[in-house]
Image (cartoon, rainbow, N blue to C red; front, side, top):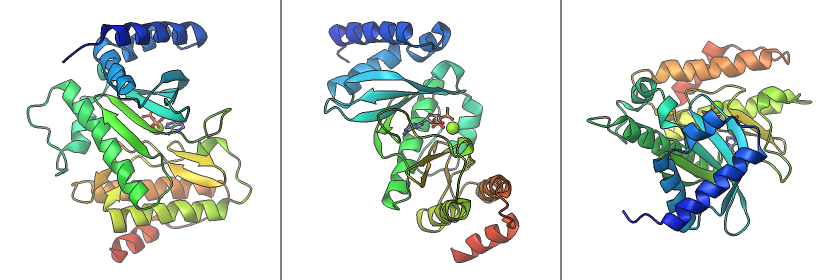
Length: 255
Ligand SMILES: Nc1ncnc2c1ncn2[C@@H]1O[C@H](COP(=O)(O)OP(=O)(O)O)[C@@H](O)[C@H]1O
Ligand SMILES: [Mg+2]
């Protein structure tokens, strides 16, 4: 592969700037921006998907999400998986049995790349079903480029951090997403909770789709149950009482 040293130098400079601009600790940033990741960024920049990285939105256990800007000036979100701190066993568990992917003889780095492609494809399914979620733009190596949910000032808050004035329609909407995803998209989020839903302009958006499995997965039904239970439990604090098991049975009956 041709390494464009100029681009690499430019990104390194930019990262130095991010480091000095924002209070993300050096260890994390060094973990995120290893050389292969810098090269991957270089490719996305030369493919004109990213112009520059603005600032970090989130530092999670396995990935960092950055706000970035496209060459057309559009704000986008960039999720970067840190190969060094990824939990491969967990990833393999959610990939295995998925006919879209294979885990045979894959390096740890390749497993992470598949994980990113899985998140991309799952987001694609949601977009095709018109379920509110980030629009996937590109999966490349350990980087996922997607549309940004939020406004100029700040990214959309998590559902868990908003105080809903009228919770019932939001609850119904999320249950509708779970059902549609499974019945029409054959997909189960598998990590759904108030921590993986953004709330923007009165609409819940599903995020963090990498662990989403299709119904063939041996644990699919358990994951579906758990997703429903998490939402039921969360909305109980708003006084919405519903029976998770009943909803689960209704949903699987529809398919
Ligand atoms: N497309 C997006 N637009 C705006 N913010 C986002 C977007 N994707 C993720 N985020 C923010 O980054 C955080 C982490 O993203 P998530 O995909 O849940 O990764 P993690 O695996 O670290 O939980 C989210 O809680 C949300 O605040
Ligand atoms: Mg998350």
